[in-house]
Length: 155
Image 1: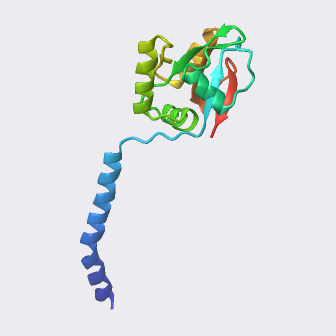
Image 2 (image 1 turned 180 degrees about the horizontal axis):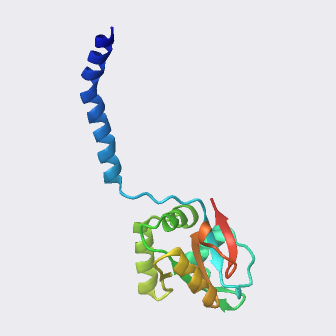
Image 3 (image 1 turned 135 degrees about the vertical axis):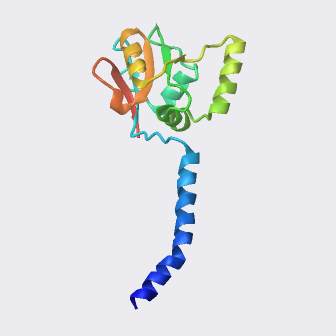
C-alpha cells in the first residue's frame, strides 16, 4: 500500500512541477506590484479649502480649476508607474496614461495650462506641498504628515 501511494505521487510530480513553474514565470513577467491602501489629496496650509470632492479634484488636475479664492494652485504629480498615481488617475481623474498624455499635449499646445510638477516620491510631494503656498498634490495616505492639509481620501 505504501508503494502505491509513492507511485501515485511520483507520477504526478512532473505535472506539479510544470504547474508551479508556470505560476513562477507568470509572477515574474507581471513585474513588481505596488499596493495602494489609499490615496490622499493634500494641500499647503495656505489653501482655504478644508475638503474637496473627487469631482473637484478631477477639475483641479485637469486645469479646469486653476484658482481657489484668488490663490493660484500649483500641482504636484507622482511618477508614471507609481501605484498611487495609477489609482489617482484611474479612480479620481478617470483618465488612462494615454488619454492623459493626449489631454496635456492639447492643453499645453493651446496655452490653456501646464501639467502638474513631476516629483519622484510621496515624500518629495509632501515636502514640496508643505513648502509651496498654493500647492496641492496626492500621495499614498501613509505618507501624509501634519505639515500638510488633507483634502480628500480615496480608498
